[in-house]
Length: 244
Image (cartoon, rainbow, N blue to C red; front, top):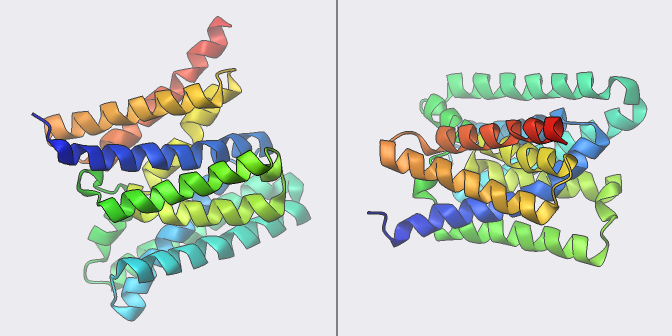
């Protein structure tokens, strides 16, 4: 029987989805889907390289460098999208490839690089901590306040790109790149099909809970199970489009 500790990863996922889903809606409306992967990969690469260069796995240090990597990537992506709008998706895709390549190089150098890289791709959320829940809750609150004060604020590049970078960099070390990407895109696809954002978030959290429960029951990697559940949920949005 699941004990109270299961509440911690559930809350981490819930707050993560609440922080990421509105950003995903904006990503789809902007037509820059690759930015999700590019920023998340930049955060993961920076988090990996800080352990390579400083031999320090401190959570705060990792988080700071992940944020710096994501912000640098956000500035690069914003500049390319403005300078070459017709080729922005292709260029952002190359940024993602560069970030992934840097991660592979870092993993090769660090003695524990492969394990660390696997964690950044698909984190084991069953062992999430209360401080990590608090970090994601803070992200959700900040994003909620931004939307409450000015609902159209995410349409402004000066707000969207830095906010996206910071939230993605906070989420990747906790949830993993795969779950972060799925949490951005899956609810956004449902919103694009006409579902309200609140309903999409609630259903996405439910789908994530199913994946997390499956990982616990079958003793399988939680990151992969949750990402698979979210990917399946997002893909089902196509059926709603066909029926409408």
